[in-house]
Figure 1: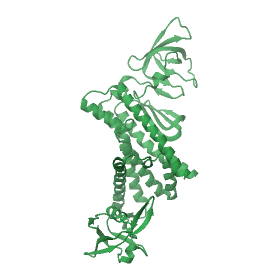
Figure 2: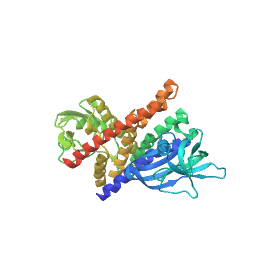
Figure 3: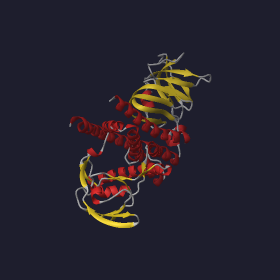
Figure 4: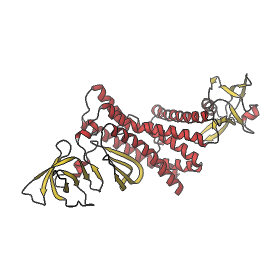
Length: 425
């Protein structure tokens, strides 16, 4: 169990880190301030302030992560409500460089202030009563790069208008939204290629038999290693994936196959054995795919696994659209943990395969046009491009909030269903 937990944290952490780094990199490139780059959720256990103004944090729950882009939240309004007691630190020009709204830290020679108002976006000022003297309201100018110490002690830069997400060009905002899923695709492809080089030999992907198992249907029918199966029931099978799909879909049913041996074409009829795979019966002939050790084949294997994994995810999504919503089609953190447990039993190759599959899965799902997901944000960007004017900030916030609430509800249902599926029954 300990190995599974550690593996789960590493796998999920790597996927989230790569995803969020995509958003972070393109936001920085576009001049958007990334106020916080967080791995994990909940209370922070470590933080570091970067020279570029980003605060990097690690939080206690290793489930997810996020980047806080300037202008993408209104937490400053909650933190700096009128009546809030803060302390200020000024520079030589008497501009505020640090605003401390936390009781967990103190500022050296900080000026105590009870806030009555502020504008940290356009005017860059705040005002209030100093030392509890309510007879006079003092107003202070705030430095453009001032630090805000939030209630939990996290230090972030304030978010003036010019470094906010909505101030960037539409193209840069679209790139920033797309970069997270894109990074997941890159990670998945690289890991699948790496997997190709960790295996002693890799499948060629061709429709050629590499080995015939003893006492199998193929052995009894006279098929041998080197035979190339080109068609099943008249359906062309140009590669192993197509061949496997045709055989699997005919458990215990007679099929006609066409194969080539030494340049000559032959036909025969046989009945694939019916075996249980997961929740269904599938057909098996008892043949093994041809393998090779060439470098080109290892690279090709990585690309083939990547494209086939993506196609499989789209097939599942298509099935959901045509056959209706079913909570069993989804998997949350509990299902991911169960998958990690199975992957660790297969060793490093099993873990790498699981990581690559999970990464491309996250990338594709995040691009679905659902509010609060990256795909939903991209959809709003496209609408903005079509109507040629910005979508009202309040409208965008409401749409994203509704999407986030629905996603949280779905996550609760999926998690409960996963618990029932993996631990109760």
